[in-house]
Length: 507
Image (tube, rainbow, N blue to C red; front, side, top):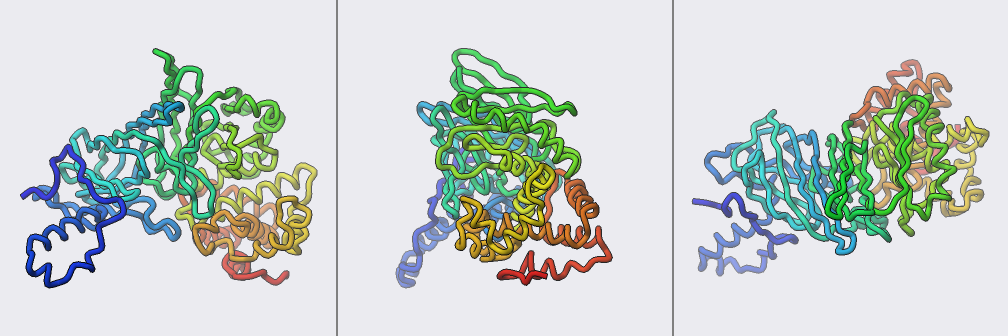
């Protein structure tokens, strides 16, 4: 007996789950056996892959889990497979705000799979195949559950193709900021931290699963499409231009970006031969020129400080997005919603080492991104005629930094910095709060005080090298520091500065 639709058809299920079954009297269920079966099928229809068992006699694997139980985004990501490559073929029409896409996802199964999930928010799925065979699929919220015709064996590589289209959505984060697919005056900008990438392509959208990318984007002639990595081709025909971008190094999906609009594109190389590509909205070109001219110098300084640059190109995207309120360290090519200043450029480029190459294992480890990039700003200032890092540390500790900084928030900002420890944000809404950034940087300065400048720089470079193009967590970092300085006792730093509540006593 078949328990689903034919293999080339979707299996519909309500997005918000099944109706409440508790309102059905037990006597009614006993009198109507057919209703019991119907209710059971209704429940099965809304369950994700991890709760389903294979119905087909020839499929003996188990479903991959939906969500990887991230502490702050438990439904994000999926189990049972590891993505190796995303091939995205997209077309975008700004006038109608319509995105058409085909995603080819190459992955390795980590278990025998009868079904697996992909993260996709909004958009309409039209067809799904696995290794060229039509697959059954259904959706519930952000989960796209795929049931291949045949079991995928553990260790085997398989290719899932998803055709989709529609109006991509903007995602509002728990902290109130926006990401996902953002409309601009002449196109769109796709940003993904922490969950927005699922708004424009299906995938395993958790930072623990990194992959290479090729993104082909077709837009109306006269517009430019900019993504991560290097431009492989550009071709115009029949009033449309197709741009193909390739990212060879592993990338977490939240670092993927796509900017569509009118840009002034500049290409050059650093003194060491590293390709540089910047794309700037013409209205912001004059205000951005001087700071972007510093980019090669900043990369050279960061290589000296943090070790070899981890990617095959660098650059920036500067677009007009009034009210966005943040820049983002999108891989190879950070995004700025307006003309950047030097400090912000230093910060986002430092993320190429800390966050992009060494990516957090879960969102609880966010301070490993932001604390490091913030401390990079302190080190840059120290080396370029600004305040020594110790003075910045002291100003933060006594609160005077908040009085001096126009955006610091005064006494309220000083109190907020001690609201929680950097390694234990209380929730998703606090992942970008000042303790993660500023107290995170203070943890690094305490390590520097303990081991001295030379050993500290060795730790910075060694950490970036040890986890290059991989993932890491806070426990791994503390263990690494202790290994690099075996004669030192870091327990007080971990207890009071990294994990401790409240303001630590000054030693």
